[in-house]
Image 1 (tube, helix red, strand yellow):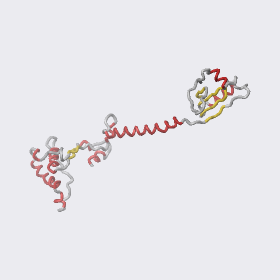
Image 2 (cartoon, rainbow, N blue to C red):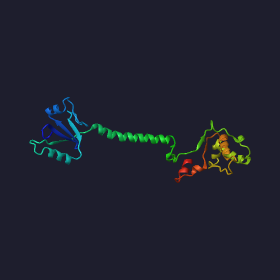
Image 3 (cartoon, rainbow, N blue to C red):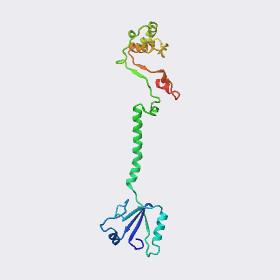
Image 4 (cartoon, rainbow, N blue to C red):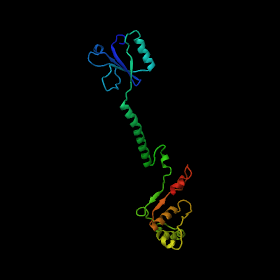
Length: 226
């Protein structure tokens, strides 16, 4: 086509895509139905090129064009054209944002579910496993429900009285007790006695296992209780 001078112009778009425009006579010769052949991409807003293809390298493309029209008078020179593919630019900006938002929603969902599944335990670090028994519905245990342990009940009555009427003790300089240590083998009623204290004093009751204090990271277990 170059030697027969059938090409009107050649545009090199963004140094990647070559657009070849034929002369009217050549266009009618190769495309009698009025169409164009070989078009794979069109970035222009004007008339469409007759042939469009992606070049391998600029040097090789220019060398091939020069070699093809070496002895041709009035050679056709390549026009370097810069165009912006707005569709690709917009997608390039929006896609990373959508990806980050989707990742954020996924992490929030995993954290709200407690991070179940393989590798999900990382979301449970620092999360308290204590169970809360509300005084209005869950804590219905009193000293009457605890069989035996009479000596322990007598010692704990003052704790219950302090929880009910703390002003009576604070006026005399009393301080809030740090806690009560119940010692004994499993199954002797330590947890039931602690729950009965909450039931007698009408206060919430938190239940947590001692194994929850043990964690891979130092201080995480204790922070759960605090």
